[in-house]
Image (cartoon, rainbow, N blue to C red; front, side, top):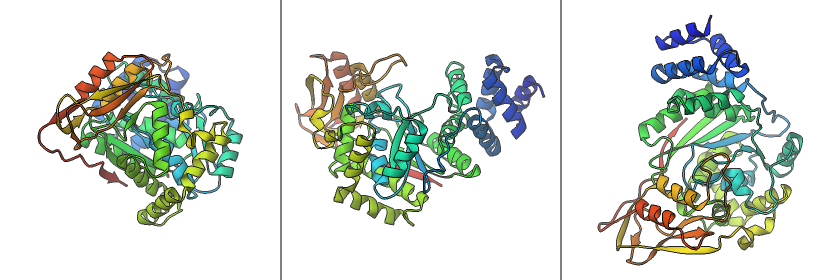
Amino acid sequence: MRTVDLITKKRDGGELTENEINNLISGYTDGSIPDYQMSAMAMAIFFRGMTPMERANLTMAMVHSGETIDLSAISGVKVDKHSTGGVGDTTTLVLAPLVASIGVPVAKMSGRGLGHTGGTIDKLESIPGFHVEIDNRTFIDLVNQNGLAVIGQSDNLTPADKKLYGLRDVTGTVNSIPLIASSIMSKKIASGADAIVLDVKTGDGAFMKEMDEAEELAACMVDIGNRVGRRTVAVLSDMSQPLGNAIGNALEVKEAIDTLRGIGPDDLTELCLTLGSHMAVLSGVASTKEEARKLLEQSIASGQALSKFKTFLAAQGGDADVVDHPERLPSAKFRIEVPAKEAGYVAAIAAENMGLAAMLLGAGRATKESVIDLAVGIVLHKKIGDSVRLGESIATIHSNTESAPEALAKIYESIRIQDQPVTPPPLLVGEVK
């Protein structure tokens, strides 16, 4: 069948077969199907959607468009975790050593961030000496030895997804749930995961700002995972305000260390325990979430989780002494306090705007070519529902310039204070299995 016939079929609401989807993706990957035809197909999918079987077949076609990572040499069930993104999302830095410390093997492929702050690798590289440039054999050996390793994403992992994402970005088809779900799940499956835990964000700072859209995306991804033989669970969590208190690379590393030490922010700690409990159950290390949570809490209390983080850092060339001496992390030259202009209660903290404020300081990338300043960022001192006195510092800007008027203005624009007490929004808002 010609490509134009497949476009017409989908445009008219038809269901594409596995063979048709495979031919479509392989043709687009090798260049025999041009961008203009794939754009038309993406738009047809945007309006017509895809059936559950089409979504699973699209996902696997993208998985097989490039190399896949074979983790079979690693003993145990390999459980991967994915977050749909947000502001101050430090969960991987805490989760990876935490679940590894109770026997869940973590073989993590991560990327660099484009947006508010760096990705997991950028954050880890704020630790002196740490590197992810290791070959696959070393990667697997480190996981078998220490239970944990992190490597950069291969350039040849799901090339069809990279190509299609770039096209969607300029054709108004980014917000297609079947295309988003297959994009995310193809990378997780190609990375070698046996099981997958998804943290799907909703709210102002999330990609899916509305709850019904987040639920639909979560259900779609869980269905894809289970349909292709990967046990998959999704947790829906609130991103109407930043997660934790720190926004910025080295600042988030310090917050992760505090959380592994048992003195981190309540919301970050709770989300990590929840996601970690699911990972432990999927891996078979625990039978129930309650049992898993006890194991995780004991690991934090005993120092076992923190010790695992040190081992992980040292194994990949990092200065493990930063755990006990966080002053070794990159540090900004200036601290600029943000005093409250009125007394009352914090009613809202616009997460996306706070992320943009951090990016103005240099904590994130506006383009792929941008150079991140690993030291800068923002530390919140108040969250939604907290009381505030006039003149009390509601945040501290960590900057390498003596003043940061644009970031300061953006923070004031983001934080709303009112007279009446406010009930904080729930952190965990749903679950899909």
